[in-house]
Image (tube, rainbow, N blue to C red):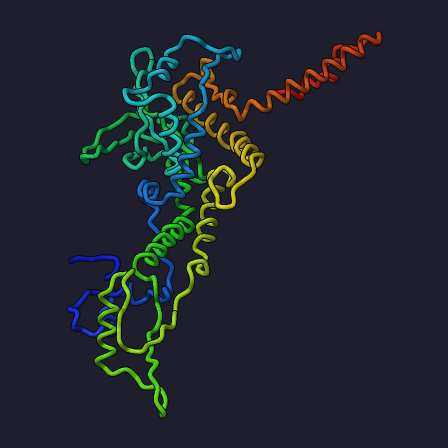
Length: 404
């Protein structure tokens, strides 16, 4: 059965000789509520990937977060905090898999985390516990087989027996626990497979999708809603249209395209019955819903494009705040989980997510250097006066402890 946008609102298109008003006698159940739906309609949050592809605000927020997270430079440090130059993990980071760089891997993990709060990375163990492959897998293709044990388990192998990965051709492959790096963003309730943040965003995501549909309908089909009434008069008052005149106007109206005019010899008056788009508050709704997404992922409204725009200082401070409050700690938590699951933490290794090379992070270093220079000049003048200061007093003047 053919089904198009026009029919979804006005039912089947019967032969043109049928009166227009009779079309509404055969409307679909959902179409006859077009002027006042009484029950809310919510999207299905189970298919988060589809929402990511269909709702531009969700994709913009998750893409911004993932792009910021992937901008780090990873450094492997030993137990003394010194940077390690040679290690198999560095080789893995240099070449994680045949098609991705490490920044691509971090981006993929950030998107999977944002959509599902569960990140699965295939990282098979080789001889001597070395790994040379790191592949982020789509979380919606993973099935976790639990062991049934929950309490008193010291490792994930006590909670999970194995994983199943489903390929696009619907074939399954079993993956052992030791060959999977499983990273989660906890929801405070579930030890394994916590609920996605997308589930708590069902309402704003539903509204975003609905307002796009509404705007499309207004643009494509409902550009003009109103009443054409007769304007003929005589001594006894107004003269109604003849049935033939009314039927002809109805046919013309029904058949016309959105930009075509109804041409009639009848003297009629147009009485609009619709609201201007601005009065429907669609764009205000869009902004409010996008703010809900931004807040859920710890970002800031100023780092996204807006109609009003933001000052340079607001954007700069907002980007810096997002890095310090969200991006850096979340990326570092991801790295800590990887190191822990690889067992390298037991050897004293630490994988640091470094963002200091970014221009936005350099401004703090410039301020610190300028402050240190001023304090050093002040200390030098004090010493020239012959005043002897202890080492602790000199540190206080230089303010070294407060510098990063």
